[in-house]
Structure formats: structure tokens, C-alpha cells
Image 1 (cartoon, rainbow, N blue to C red):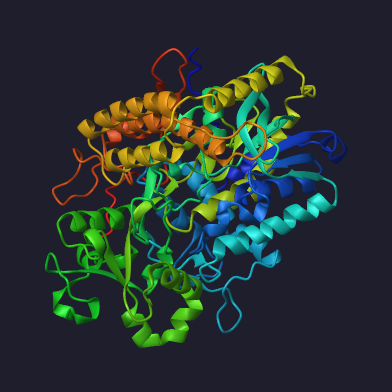
Image 2: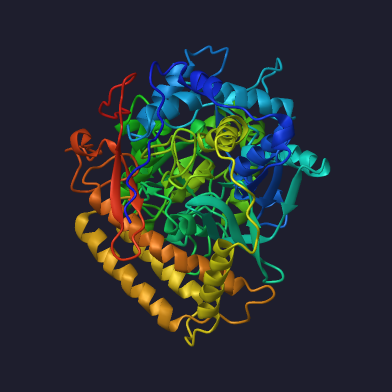
Length: 639
């Protein structure tokens, strides 16, 4: 049955103090009462760890489920370059309003302006929180926090810890979480894979999780559920995500009624180490921060075979500097990725297969010295040399775009609650402030804003207004969810096919990067839909999942997530086909300017597309109109 789109609860009145007014108007719960309420948090990355620690600090009884053996292994640890914040002291004119404007413009005006404004306001407090936790941000000689620039901004507002910013921020949140574990306020359950959402009378009340060591299916219930499980770029098979990053938790929630917003908004990161061969299992990110000191270029002559140091300056095309003189190498990710791909397709690329461009730090090393560059990026340089075999201090890096972050995710209102009452979605798992393209260094900012500052207030408000009784693990809804999960697992284990799961995943990824990658067109999207449907049918008939349901079974884990990826892939293709415009990372070849830039359609598509799962047919598309009061949509130009 069609539910329609819930109220997004966007606050009325001026944007500047909308979050303060909203927060002050939210109901509270006494500390004693909080101690009688259970909260379930799924995921222990930045959003999950920070939310669990903060809710436990408030007095709630929190249960945390982690896919990993330790929260420190959550994929947030892999973020490299930095975290944005509008600084209280800015020497280059930065401000909350500038960060708001850059975020809204960077997302190509496909995000809610109220959310972008709130994120910009909270940003400085995030840095204060992390410094207080001991996060070792880089500092200037005088002791003040250092910053650097990222794509899509003309100011230096990105705080960093070398190329390990995500790791250091996660360790700060991890310490806060483990303090609550030690105090007995958090029950941390590791190696749990969430496979189903439990709803009672339409309200989220728990999950079914598989213990990855015993294979046992467990039921966990609570008054409210927070999904903080990250993005879905592994639908492309090769991506910068960890191998086990998946979409199962949010996809199962979608099938239970949670709307999925803008699934086609997926980011292709411009600076990744190119794939070595067809059997490679993942790609490695080189932080966008390298573009502060590195210059991106290609030889002017197609098919160039000389080593880069043998190519004279007059035969080098610094194409981002040429095409975008104002932003140069700091153009946003979607623009930089598209230009690199176009030139490589035109035969100008370097390296094996001509699928790379140069990221060259030679000028910066010559001007500042090797030690200065090593102090900023040392671990990145070491990682590149170990993987590629080339010394980036002596030879330009070879980079190429790769799937990275997903701006789409479960639809949430201003309070971060999905269309299923009681189900909150935080961090990359939700559709939130990034619109059609996330600016670099904004993911960490959003995850911590959701976990430390927003959800603790809005979750409390929800619990204050909903005095439901506790749900026993033998409740009929729990038994039904448990049985359906058993059936899915049995079907995979008992499949009589002979083809490994990875074969299907690799083939799915090839279809998706070709049909729904850096650029898309209507014919390719339609063909992609048919290809994915056929591939899913083959998977059902031909897949082989060795081993048993009991005990550890990595192939079963992969099969479960790849099965969910088939459904997600089809939704992504439908979403890209329905959005007849180009905006941000969604580049439809039919909708571009004479100069090859994205052409938005603000008359027909200035909205969030929210898809409803339909058991009996094709998914149903709803739209949430976007209102702009503080900043009107304009042509997104970085020239």
C-alpha cells in the first residue's frame, strides 16, 4: 500500500537559528526514565560510535551491533584528507554562511538548505569536541590548528591529521564509546551482520542479526533503532570501500517500508590508484588533499610513451587549471572525474590501457622540500609506493576516478528519522546534506554532526512522545522476521549452482560502472536494467555457496549482500533514468551544455526522489520539493 511521503519537518522561519529553535522546542526525558529505555545502534563508524557514546552519556541503555571484531575497524578509519568546519577565526573570509553556500552549491542545489545550514553551524563545535577528546589535528608553528583546502572551496577550512584524519576521529569516538562500555551503559556486540529489520505496528523495534562466528541468528529489540551502516559503493564491485561494506541493513529496511532517496547520486572520486587487473578486489584512495600541492596533467600528444620527466613543460596539459582557472586543481570531485575520463577516452591517458592521469608533486617538492611534503602526506606517499612500486617523490602519481561515496540513502526528515517511525538513519546511510555531489571533507563532518549533536536530541524527542512497551524476542513480529531470514539463508545454501558469488558481483559491477557510472544516458540505463535483471535470474539458478549456515561462512556473507545489491542496482538505474537532467555526480549525456557541463532542470527536478518498495510491482517514486530562500539555484560554475 502506498504511504506517500511523510512530513520532512523542515522548520519554518529564518534559517540562521532554525536548528536552535527546533532543538529548544523538543521535549526532554528525565535521566531516571532514560535509564529504563533501550536504544539499538547498528554500526560503529563515526556516526554509530558517536551516537552510541552520546546517548549512553545521557543515560540510555544502549546496545551496539558491529560487523567487525572491533569498532576501530569500521570503514570511517579509511578516510584520509580531513574534516570541514567554518572556523571562528578566519583569515581568508570563511564563515558559517560561506560553508553553507559551498555545501548547497557543491551538491548542485539538490539538498535541503535547512540541513546544509545546520551542518555549517554545528561544524565548529565538532572540531572543539574532537580536540577535547585528544584527536591529534595538525597544528601551525604557534600551536593553532592547521587547515588546508579541498575541492569546491576557495578558502582553507579543512582540519586534518596528515592523511589519517578518519582514523584519528574514529579513535576519538571509539574512546568515548568504550568509556560507556566500561561504565556498563553500552553493551557492545561484535561480529554481527544485520539481515532484517523488525517492525511492530509499523514502528521499528529491532533487528535480526547473524553472529558471524557461530552462524546463529539473533533477535535484538529496543524502543528505537539507529542505522549507521555506511554507503553502498560496493554495488560497483571495484570501489574505495572496504570489501565487506554493504547495503544489507538499509536495503532490508527499504523493503520493510523505508523510502530510499536519490539512489543514483553516487560519487566517483578523481584521485584513486588505477586498477591493476580484472581480478583486483578493491581500489585504493589517494586523498583529494594531494591536489593542494599536486598538479593534475596529461601529455598533449595522444599515445605518449615517454616517461613523465622526459615530457617538456610545453607538451603538458594542466587541464583542470586550463578549464577552471578560478578553482584549478581544486575543482569538485564530479567535475575533475568527468574531465579525466573524457581525456582518457580521447586517447590522452597514460599508464596501462591509457586509464590514468598524472598527479604531480614535483613543483611543491622543489619549492618547499621533500620533508615539508612528507609532513603533510607521508603515509599517503608510503601507501602509494607500496602499491604501485613507484616513488611519488621522484615520479608523478598515476590516478584515475573510482566509485567512492554515496550521497543517496534512506530518506530521513529534519530529525533524521526515516519514513518508518522509530527508525533513525545517520551518516552515509541516509540521504542528507550532500545533494547530488558531496564536497570533499564533508562526510566526516556529517557523520559526527548526526551522531554527537543531532540524533541525541531528536531520538529523545521521539521517545518522549512514544511510550511503547518493550518487545519480547518471541513476539510474533520477531518470529516472522527470524523465519524469513532463515528462508533466505537456506535458499542460498541449498542452491545447486556451480558459479562463485564473486563472479556475479564482478559482472554486476561492470554493468553498473558502464551504465550508471561517471556518465549515463537513457539507452544505456534501459539496457543496464535488463542486464541486471538477467544477471539476478542467473544468480538464483547458478550461484554456489559452499559450507553451511552454522559457523563462519564468508561466501554466505557475500551471497547475502550481493543478492541485496541486485535490488539496489535496479533501483539506482531506475532513479537515474527518471531524473532527466544533469546535476552534480549524476551526469546524463543528453543534458549538457555546449562546453560539456551539467545542465540542471530546476523546473521539473528541484526535488528529492524518494522510492517506495512495491512488493507487487515496480517501485513507486515520490518527490519532496526543495525550497530555496537563502540562496537561489544558479549555474554551478567553477571557472
